[in-house]
Length: 69
Image (cartoon, rainbow, N blue to C red; front, side, top):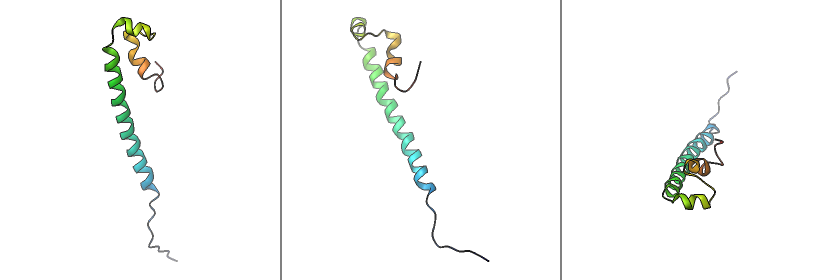
């Protein structure tokens, strides 16, 4: 007995498009954070100290919610 259907299963397509969308979202978020790092690097040591930071802690501070360093 043969089974034939003329419908196409597109269940994989939304998962693929969500993966692509997530990839580009992460790239955009990383670019925005690199701008924050550059902005904080332009601050003086005294301004960083007021924020409770040192120069070597800038990247750790900017990415604190994503990475545990």
